[in-house]
Image (cartoon, rainbow, N blue to C red):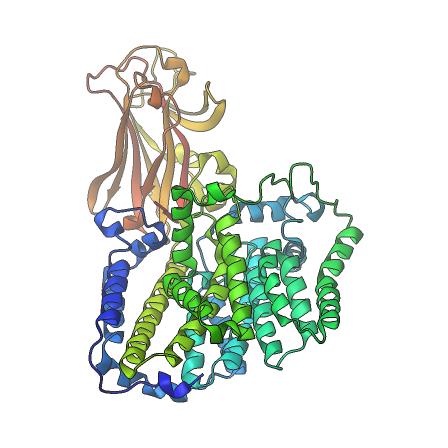
Amino acid sequence: MNADRLEFQNVRPVALVPVTVALIAAALLITAGGTTFGDNGWWAFGFLTYVPMALRWLAGALIVLASVPFAYGWWRPLRRLVIPWWAALPTALAAFWVFRERTWHGDALYKVDLLTKQPLQANPYVWKEPLDSLLEYALSGLVQPVGLGPDVAIALMSVAAGGVFVLATWAAATWLAGSTLRRLVVYTALLAGGTSLLWFGHVENYSWSTAMAFATLALAVGYLGGRAPLWAVAVAGGAAVSFHPQAAFVLPALLVLLRRDRWLRQIVTLVLGGLVVPLLTAGVFWWLKVPPPGLDGGFAGDPQLFWTPMQALAPAQLAEALQNLWLIAPLWPLWIGAGVWGTAQPGLRRDRTFLLLTVAASGVLFYFFAFQNDLARHRDWDLFAIAGPPLALWGVCAWLRLLDMAPSPRAAATLRQSLATALVFATAFTIFWVGVNHTYTLVRPNSAERELYARYRLLDLATLLRQTTITPDAPICTEATGCERVALTEFTMPQSGDTRPVIFAHAPAEISMPLTVPAERSFLWLSPALDPQAWNWGGDGVTFTVQVRSDAGEATLWSRHITPADPADRDWQQAFVPLDEYRGQAITLVLATDPGPAGDDAGDRAGWGMPWLMRGTVAP
């Protein structure tokens, strides 16, 4: 590559293309993909609503600034910036741990619950991620004596995987880019993507497979340049697949390494080296008496691993996949466009390194679009994060080659400005993504999995009942015992058998309880409902209200009228009430039930089901 072609010049005309790209990118950040205007279709940008608007405007201004020529002089010192791996690695590891995530994604809750309650031999996940499961159990056992849970063990593994990724990124940039500035471009392209969240204490099982799959690709690049041995490529590839089989989609690219004059020896090295870690992992499983995977219902109980072409290309499925791609590789249009252009160039098609990257990117993109998953992509985006780094490396290398082959200085300047603009956008996007997940505990409560979500519970309000003031305090019938207006009981919905504990509160009733709101973000998770035995007793329903009395006065936070005349109201309802405004304050929380508009209290047997004070913020 001609490094001099990338250096910035102080004087050149403003190019329309990079400025247009900058304005579009800035608009995406500032409006959170349109969410600010009520368009919630672009969920990959929805997290930006948690970023202060002032920071989004600042990021937008920096993106636009990067697209104009006079800003380029500020970048000139970067040409002399040298980042040795021994300095980059500890800095990155410290950042990964300090800014680790507080929001858990995908099956993280379920995974931690399994590690807490199930032995390795009974964990249904073990054959989906063999080496990952083995190390998680081992490390969980090591941290348990000091009072730490499996979530900390997984977070430590995630940070360590980030160290491997940083080293692989440093190696790939060193071996592929000739100048310091171009190496910085490769670093930024690889780290500026949603995939990077995997290194920030990510509590899931994709960090190591993603890191090792990319390390395999980086070592393969090194092998083609005479910088790395083939056995190291093979061992890394085998380890990647042992962590999670998804890494297998990078391995076909290793066929590019074969040469006619020594292909047999290379194949033997790849096969034998690739089997080392899988065989060791299987041997440990055998020693620990882990039962083999059952294949009756498909691999590890999954009967359909891949979508059919019609399913994968269905508009709704394709839209979800592209949203996911925006998140893990926010510059994917640039990378795919440059990569496809590169494959059409005869000179690049004969370049074995570029061919290696092309096959690797094609493999992970096939996995990305074709792999079937039971969870929605917005919840399980990290399952597909492995596609981000190979795609970015393929694209940025193609873009730099495109820059070298530009037909004129003006075209080269436009390409440089566009690349700089895009990288600033991706960097801001990634910093915001990591920052939001570190600052917030975003929770998507699911009553069907409430035992798992009890991990976020700070307090069961039912335990405060003895400290409450009840108005009126008169019983609801002549017998005092058994006719309390407010009492602890439970309701069972006959249509589903869903039983939940409730604070029974026959309308009218006002339950005032003293509460010190935690200093962290918190919310109430309530399940208001009408007693099924009174659905047919007449009346016009019950109005449920949540109020707060504080030094600032009284405020109504939530209210809803529920009537048995509406079939949808004959079930548990959901109420999520944020208390962030009262963080650290002593308040009086009021749960009120009132008769309907007509004042008819016939059949007004009501209750506050599962009244939990929760840690975190309810995600939309």
